[in-house]
Length: 254
Image: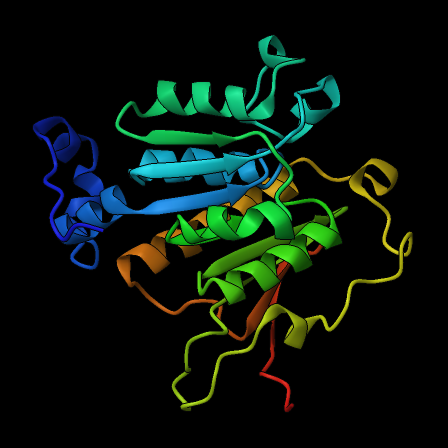
């Protein structure tokens, strides 16, 4: 990664509201321009993630998804429109991002990421955001990112609620011990069929929008070195009661 990445006059005007923030400034905006962020899934969570990262000026965004847009997606997957039905989601995502911000490069990965193809892919990005809709991918991504030493923001939704945390288990925390990983929070996936899918249980369309927006905020904080991250903290969002709760967790003793 280069240490300098000048902003064009158009970019200076586009990102002016970021640049006047002392915590971001020109240096932070340049860091966003240099950054490479991989987003797993261009669905309900991935939609706001991709839109807000692109709007913020993340220079290179990778998108992995092997699904096509369907009518039932449009209730929550705001990245896509009626005209995109039947189109690969990564193509629709790239088109939407190009319309929003032509300064952003989109790298399309039409695949379901796994242990076999994931290592080289994950290692080519600075950080990863997982908005996938299944436990196998979430656990697999957590393991891959820990192995490849890449920060991971992982979010999940169910009906009217969701959760999000940030994982950097390869780094030491303020206490001098390694930060917790995903399996310190969830030791193993639940038994098959125990947790119904969104298709089975339903999902309020706005819920993945809220979690995706929070995930984008965590990613921008990681890139710019801002604020307190959700490391060792699981943020729980309940839209029925409009409550935000937090569960703290630590690395398990081996």
